[in-house]
Image 1 (cartoon, rainbow, N blue to C red):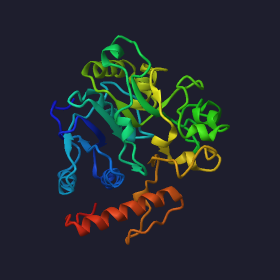
Image 2: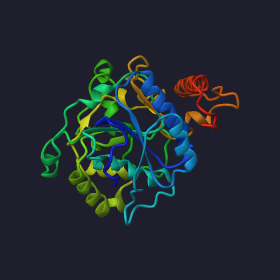
Image 3: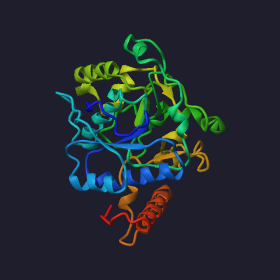
Image 4: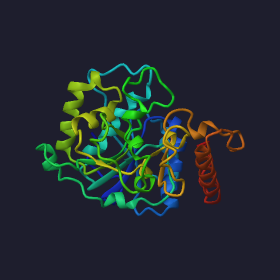
Length: 316
């Protein structure tokens, strides 16, 4: 739980979780891309005690507000040794607790904003009091997870196959897929991706989430995503893929039929490698996934802007 104070004056904020410096260049470029596309709202970095002082100094040097949160972890949870990143993911539930803000849109730090998406700050969601009573079908908004498992990871659930993926059901109508999410009840899984979450914070709702987390964590394959998908099954607003455009959707043989480069608002660089892993010493893109090159270009624009505006060179 955070301390109840605001990190900024605005009561509507983007937030992103940061626990280590490995994702810091991602966060800095995410912030730069939001500003490039003239968002009216600030990004607040939610950091845990594991985030080093060098990272906090880098945020301060760039004027990015930071707010400390407690590291959230179930008392008894699942073994994520196959995917250690999921240990950090529980803390992505914290925005539900930030009552000092009227609206929080949580973004993963491995995202790149390509178009303004401030409309997410105004979209209607359920009153938290109704959520606590088990009422309403608009608890939060998010994009679907892709459950195709294109990399065929053996520890993923056996039912994560293309036939069960919500995006597969949109292949026949790609024009509609740009503007409409697909009903959470479509397909047998109804699973959300936690990379972008639109939330009306409430400590009572957060308590409900934590209670569910504590009693079900040993069965949650995908940490925060599993908790929200199970607890609020069929009660969340499905956003079109353009707000959380998982890079794998663009791949041939996955969901290329619905992907449109000129419509995507926010790319999510799920899985490894990350774009910042595919640059040479001169900052040139050396990978093969074209979408990673988009991030490298914007990152270089950020570094150029920082140099011109006197931001100290700190390696991030």
